[in-house]
Length: 125
Image 1 (cartoon, rainbow, N blue to C red):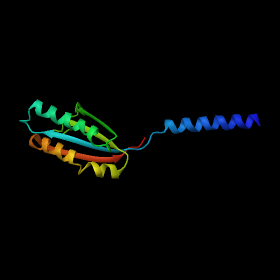
Image 2 (image 1 turned 90 degrees about the vertical axis):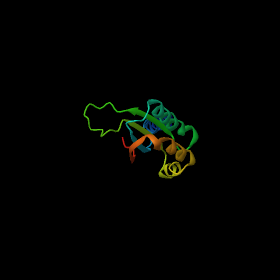
Image 3 (image 1 turned 90 degrees about the horizontal axis):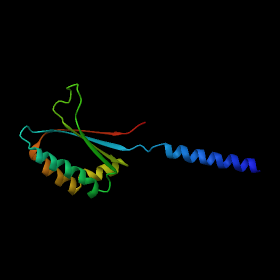
Image 4 (image 1 turned 180 degrees about the vertical axis):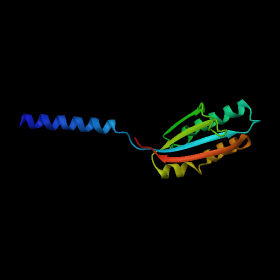
């Protein structure tokens, strides 16, 4: 009986460990910006700060990160800034898209935006 309990306890521990090691798939919303040539650095900085702040204003955004292109390949077609937003579901993403705070952000962005590229995908390991 003690052996059976030990095996069950060990199995439960291993199963719990496997579940914590297994990460949940997230809906990734990738946004890349190409800014107008006359966009001022302080305008771009204001856009970055406003975009990052959306995570504090829209509860459906689970994670946010961004970075500057530094690829040596020269294939970025003028896109310099890349942003990743993570969502638990398509419903959460669909709530974010028309959200008033997202629309407000778009109004700040429009005057200095030359082009935008958006790709959504479900993350896989």
